Amino acid sequence: MIGPYVLPDDVFDALAAGAGGRPAVLLLLRARRSRNLLLLRRALDGPCGRAVEPAADLLAGVERVDPEAARSVIDGPAFGTWAARTLGDCPAHHRGGCAGRDLAALAVLAAVRAARPARVTVPVREGRLRLPGLGTVTGLGEVPEALVVVEAPAGAEGAPGTSAGSCRVRVLTAAGERVLPRDPSRPGHGWQPVAVLDARHRGLTLRLPLETATPELPALETASAGPAAWQDLLRQAWELLVDNHPRRAEELAAGLNGIVPLPAPARGVASATSRHAFGTVLTSWPADPERLALTLLHEFQHSKLSALTDLVTLYESGGGPRLYAPWRPDPRPPGGLLQGIYAHLGDLAFWQERSGSRHGPAQADAAWRLAQTRAHVERGLTEAASHVRLTALGTRFLERLARTVRDGDRDGTGAGGGSGGERLARAVARVQAGDEAVWRLRWAAADDTGTERLAALWRAGRPAGPLPAEDVRAATGAVVGPGPEFGRWAARQRGAERARPAREAADAVLAEPHRAQGWAELAAAAGEEGRPGADVLRARTELVRDLCVRLTARQPAPPPGAAPPRPPDPLALAAWLADTAVGTDRSGVGAAAD
Image: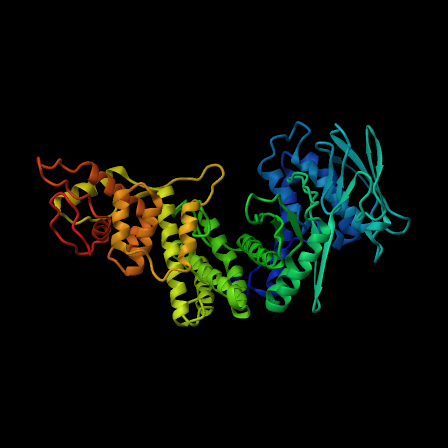
């Protein structure tokens, strides 16, 4: 099952273009299987080896009689995350709580699928015995472990067509014995099965466990969105994907292997992908089939790129450690930035189709989301080119990706062409500029010495020269977005003809220099009006604000009876920082740049 993998050039280019197709996904799946087996070997050779060995022996026995049953577990949602926990952060190697012991639960699944007799000890936590892919035994009390016995009918072991329901599974603890239902997909007393969702449309089938038995998750309340609701939602989402994105639907059918339901956030939908669990989508209840379809496309892009980077190196260490990603409120590392860019290609394909097939308000909403997604990807590509140390393959990867984005915008507006498209593009650009300005004020800080040098040069009427270095702070704890004030402003841009006049926005900033929303409006207005220094207002907002505050605080007191000096004009400061010709009369005040 372990073998070397060479990524053909055409497959690499197809993946870089955003899709790749079924053959590429199957290659990535095989490569990830080999990786998982190598991680198993490392676990056996490491400090957790004694805890891992009994389950590994059982898996090896299953592989000899039913290779497909073993592969289904090694490829499944829980194996890679188990290996990562065991090898990366297992604090209890020698205290009986070692994460390596959790492999036993996966070995039980393999034995049941192969109808192979087995006896293996599985950890019990908080009275629950979790068997990923099968279900959860509840109400076991304060016992640390249970002996799970799989009994297969005589002659059933490894027999073609044998089903999991052929086995009898017993759970023995010091407190007694539990027997699982003959059909483990049916609930029973103290037994919560993992539901299997099944969607079929036009010859393409998607079978996904609704994985509620993973050790990493809390016990989830599924009364409001139980298996039947998930089944109905997946069926509708699958029809949408097969009808409108057939090539990507083929990828999903080949590579998706499970949905892990997450607790619902306060607002919206939470979704994620573990880089260690190829093909597994973690998501809270999406509420409508369109959102589920989009989530599957987006998160599977993450899985593909994670598997691809097992085989090739796209960037080297160094470069900017914390970068701007317009789809996130927090700074991202280089790998996170590339992941976000690639995942948004799935969104781009989705909204491209929706904007062409909808009508009325729904079409306008899809066009907005399409234009915004394209702007996100383009800005992410610029950030990666500027701050990520790409390898030759990484450069080729992003160039091919950028070509996909360009090819999807043949009318040049990203919004259907014409004056309506141009207006939409301007509105999206305003929101993007404002978002980046607010992000800069939140996370970036200019070097104090360099900023003080600039203040002295401004007062002396000399050129700014090189801008000082910046420091982007690391995020700690939970990170929320830019806040309701920005959200209300951004929402208004969709219906606005133009930005607030830059001169008016600059005056508002001077009146309240510490109000982030004012700087967002100024960056958006300067960009739309093509003002000198607009790029500095957007990409070094923290520097312009710091200079304004410093220069205002150090203005000389006016003579008696004289009018107070005007504070430095942020538009003039930004133009000066951008090395743009501006007025030279700076006798204590900033020259106007109107």
